[in-house]
Structures are given as structure tokens and as C-alpha cells.
Image (spheres, rainbow, N blue to C red):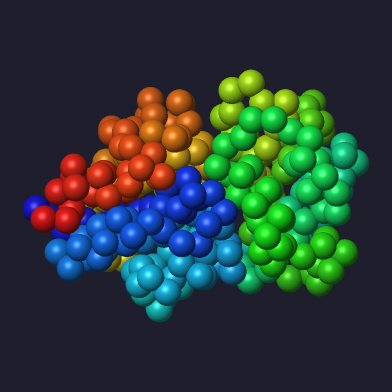
Length: 275
């Protein structure tokens, strides 16, 4: 087998949403794959600060902030925060329409006051929403927006009761940003991410593959939500978790068991990555 580059989403894929501790079975599978010569990268919407606890497990690099910050080994391949003008416009338009905002720098995360109370009123949920709810409940270093100090921002997460609240922001910003709305059936809320069109998880995969001299046909991506779509469409083999988005499953070559059912280990074994 050719040596593969393996890209793993975190929340709902490598770990239960909001957790920093992968199942033992996943760590064993990753270790065996690396021992076989494959390279394993995190590929996540989390910023470097929120994914950093997982780097202790020996990953070969990370596509972070939805593709806005990419590191391979100790080399930074890509670093693309929003411009100040973009950030100010986006934040103002969302605030005018009572949209809750979380902004992510490379090394810090800030959230609107009142977001925890809003999350307590919504029903349904995907791995991204569960991650934010858990992060707020466990005080995982999400600081109040009032403490934001002007450092560069890579991504804005939005949450609101109705898609109409995003209308003016879409009109002004969709030329430069994708509004990635999560795919949740029967939910009474809207949550998603504002992602610069200059990058996504798929462009991050391409950057790593180019740097490593590996053909995209020899890349594999594991994900669960719609912010993994570009990764799944880019890699040679896309895998969705059983607990994942129904739409993402349709775009994936394979579906493996849920994260809580040792799904990552099962997927690695089925693809022959641990032999």
C-alpha cells in the first residue's frame, strides 16, 4: 500500500464533541497507522488554542481554523486571518440582527455574552453545537467578547433563532465569505461558520499533500459535519461517521461506526491502515 496522508476532524470524529480525549481504540489505530509509515493530521474548525491539547498525542500537523492556519510538522504552510475591515463589517452586521457570535484568533476564542443562555433554549444539535455548549459549560477558555483585544481573527461562528437574521450579512459578505450552515434536521435554531473563501479544509489538505509530495489519491479524510464537506470532496477517500450529517454521508465513499462505538478504529482497519 502507498503511504497515506490521513486527515481527522476532531469533534464527533476523533472525540466526542467538546472532548480533548480520544478513545483508546482511536489512539491505538493512529499509532499503528503511523508505525506503518502513514502520516496523520488533525483537520478541524478548532483554532490552534482549542486543538492544542490533542497535539500531545503525536499528530504530524494540523489544518486548523477551517483551513485558515495550516502546519506540517514544525513548518507553517498557511496563515490567513481576516482583514480588519472584514472583521468589523461582519461583526457589526451580525450584531445588528441579534446573531450570537464567537470569534476565533489563533490562540484565543471570544464569545458574546448571553450565548450560553441561548444554547440552553435550543433543541436538537450536531457535533459543532454540542462542542460549543460543552465548552461554555466547562469554561474551556472561551473569553467574554468584552475582553477581545484586536488580535487577528480567522473565523466567526454564528448562532441565531432564524436564518432571516443572516440576510443582511449574507448580502454584504457572501462574495468574500462562505456561510457554512450546519445540516440539522428539525432544529429550532441556525448555527454555522463564516469562512473566508480563500481557504477551507480542502485547500488545507492540498497544501499538506503538496508539501509532503503525496498525490491526493493517497489522502483519506474522516469527518462528521458539513464543515468537513470540502475535505471529503478533496481527499482520495472520504469517510463519514455514522453519527454524522446525512448530507455528508452522501458525499462520502464510506461510512464507519459512530465515534462512541470505536468508529475511527473500525474505519482505519477497513482501509488497511493498521496492517
